[in-house]
Length: 236
Image (cartoon, rainbow, N blue to C red; front, top):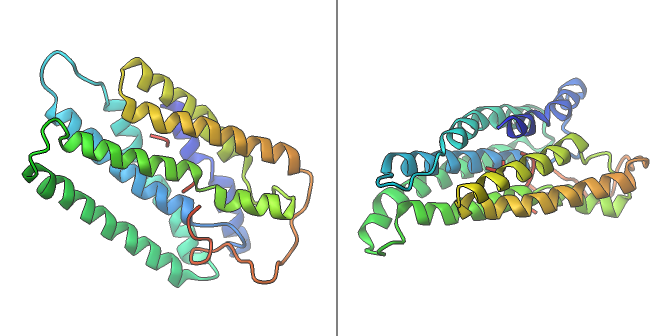
């Protein structure tokens, strides 16, 4: 729980830099937008699992619910920085609208469509769990947008080390929790998060001493052109 909260807070230095310069530079809003969507899905998943549990086998997902609910608001605060200071604010607004629409579609699918299909044991929590796993994997992989730039420019200036370290630590903790409670919806994406977090830390260690070029013709990692690689920020 603590590591995940620190993970959510890890982009603060990046956002303070954006606010100070009044320019989002080459930072991408994609990780934060996906994190908002991901946290929303995990919050929804925890609610339907907690409310629907019966019998002796029960998963304690209260910590997951609390941290993801908080994550929605924290990640949206970061998105707000890009809405204000991105070089292409229209693209960021468009992506935010897409997140809202996708969440509405997801709720409709889980609450209206799935219960009518007669899929047996593959019920609402199972379907939503599968979807959240995919989104969690995307979120952990979204820094690949920036990682590709790190490799190309041989500079880690736009790969915040605090975020990479937070991904590694909180993924390890949530993967352990998922294993202990035998919830593989929690365990699987966080094992991948450990791997991607370690990869990001390795890149930072290799290229941290180099300065990024001021401009690269034809390259601008903004909301519209970075196009998903998924992330900062859970994780569960």
